[in-house]
Image (cartoon, rainbow, N blue to C red; front, top):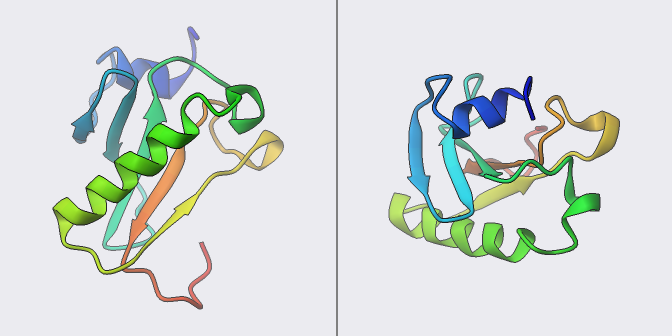
Length: 106
């Protein structure tokens, strides 16, 4: 999508701190972190949110999150996905937050 900030990051038009990349997903640091480890896991193909995904990326995101947690030595992590009007960016993405207290609001 032409004006999508995540599409521009994926195409390297906009710089970002990229942490990991697969054939279908890109992981980069959140610019306003809510935890010590706060990454965004984003499908490379522009999809509005999970309601349009049909499970295609969801399983891959879960596997990648587990890999990230192991690589970073995290004992716990949280994944957050906002759909529709709750999403700040209309490109499917999951917030991956490491070592977040149970009572912390995200």
